[in-house]
Amino acid sequence: MNPVTSRALLSLLLLSSSSSLVAIPTTATLTAVNEQNFNRITLEFEPPVLPTGRDTTRLSGSIEVLLEIDPVTDRVSEMTILDGDVQGSAVELSGSTFLIGSYDLESSTLGATLDTPLPPGVVDPATGEFDSSQHTFTVSSGTLGGNIRIGLLGINENLDFDFTNEPVGGTGLGTGSVTLTPTTITPTSKAYNVDVQLPIAVDQVFEAAGVEVPIRAEGAAKLSGPATVQITPEDPFTLWATANGISGATPLEDSNEDGVSNGIQWALGLNASENPFPHLLQPGEVNAATVAFSLSLPKGGTASALLVTTGSDPLRPFSPVGPALISTGRNPIPAGTSGDVTIRIPRGQRGFIQLSTP
Image 1 (cartoon, rainbow, N blue to C red):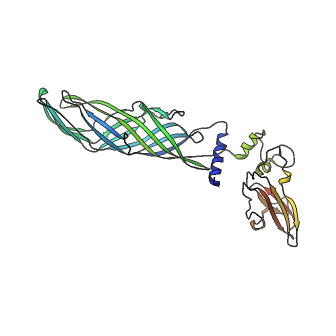
Image 2 (image 1 turned 60 degrees about the vertical axis):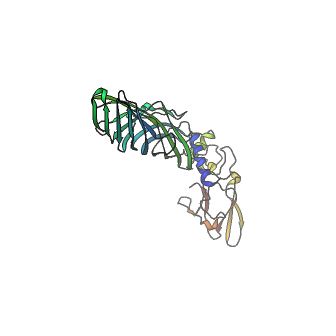
Image 3 (image 1 turned 90 degrees about the horizontal axis):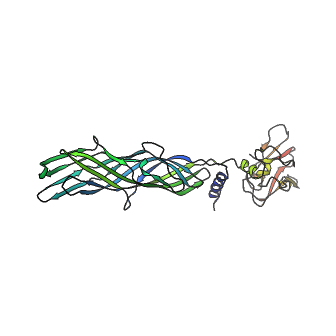
């Protein structure tokens, strides 16, 4: 496992150990998929005494949704449609009965809107399912025109129906769903692929040539796209203190009164009750040029970076030791370092050496 993934997993573990979790809001742009059985809405035109005409419009386009996602459980508790404009391909509706009549209608490209009229759109976190009636589907632009002839009723007229002036719509039907698939995790974010399935049903009556004609639409919309939630892990020292039974302690305090601060105890990767002294700075060899100090860091690695500084006056700020004088080649010594580390100070330099957390 690479270091970035390890840190990301640690961030989520820190989140999961907190006492309460709140779903994180994020927006996502979802695009209609090109999959069989989805985004194919069947339109029905049912004039009196004539057979029902049917055709299928294929939806395309995208919508913007607001999601509330728990990045620890990968569950979603809200899906609200903020902006949903999609397009439907043109349809042809026709039917005839010998000696009775016929009709032949053709539409332009249709425009439809998806909406959540009374937000929020509630989702069951345990299942990802929601009541589709929270959302609406409305054919809101485009035209449907042609001729209808019904001899028995004395009808022979050209129709020109404009959905912009008379939208046709209704609420979702049955149960929809939101599916989250984690894709990428970093220490500060988690990304998902989001799939939303929304069953659609429209049943409306409009007047054509003085006769009421039902028009229906039924199918299932499916839209997919990426979503990312930002993660703010709790302070790792605070979590360490809680796990060690010293909740509320600060890094500068010395809870076990051994002369070493809680912050150093934590940074070394030790429990609060462990003896820190074998892992602190120890004097080493002296040669003509340098005085050496050594650190024997725990096998499990340090929990935090460690900064090595020197100074001649304890009451004034210390200065970081140059990385070239530390065997790791880095100062601060990186978190996760274990084993022996050597620090060499020029022999002519007098003063103090200090180990701290940055």
